Length: 472
Image (cartoon, rainbow, N blue to C red):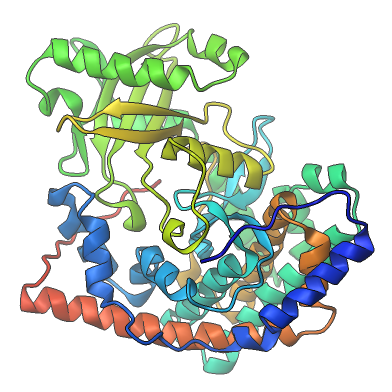
């Protein structure tokens, strides 16, 4: 079990660097260069089934159906399996606030409150304090798995991983020499990213990057409003699309119960916001709510869309309230200190991201089954640009890997000790090369686990259904 090490500002930079180098005795950099399943490793299907036991039973087959579409989609839903595998491994003890699920699709273009387009981590369901290398390993393995799906050679896959890990290491070294507030204010503005990468891109790649940026700016709350709602005799309401979107009115016995449940969720969430944001929220009234099926890793957890209206039916605010369960990392670290898992997610996101949604908050609610659950709340769609690794050639995926690695280093430098981590990594490429070995070995394990779930579905041990994954 990993015990988080508290950062001590009284230490000098030299002492912090010495501490980082000392961590090589606990976990030599070369130890990260392989993966071998631990003796007595649990059956991966059993691990998934234990996690599925806390989810909506009718949605579990949908989850498995999506995971069985490809090894990459399986990996997206298998963070709990990887947590089991990382837990027993040698640990540096260099603690950061982990994303917890740092695969490449969880790095996206997002809107800042100042309406700038930034590149940042987007998913924090599993965020928890832990050793920095766990996030780097999850990113590295995802790059190999994506490269294999695209038909890259083993050498091309390794080049992509090295590009991402090298960017992480080099940027961490930059942060090690920066003032504390400069680290906190650092961000990856989309325009700056484009300028930095322009010299490495050919004309076709530059055009694709420009189109992706433009598309992200069109994915606003107004576009979501038009897509997900419709006018009715009672006013604007969320459009049903079962089983992916089911209005609350179709799940409860009467309007009085519907209104009570909606008000309880809304009031509890509002109390988690700062005073000025509660003031802004008071300009909106709850109009409708619906259950929504979300992406691969979260299918089966409770997720609700809340439609709020301001001045009139053309003044919307769409929020997403997503169930927050215990992080899959909790059993393999020193645990967490939050009595509300939604608050854990929000606290982790605010610590890792350079800028967070102004409506980010949490709540605690009683579900339709009478059980109490934690939720975190954020806007639904706000200038989100999602990568398409299946369309990337080796050069473009390497560029994307570099940006992911640099972004992850920024997140870790905000929450951990960049001086100690940089000293541990060193100026050479030993860690970079080690991670290519791990990523290849873990991608092999992921293939075996994918096949195990497929065999379980074919034998009837689990049930899998196919549905189209919604945009998130």
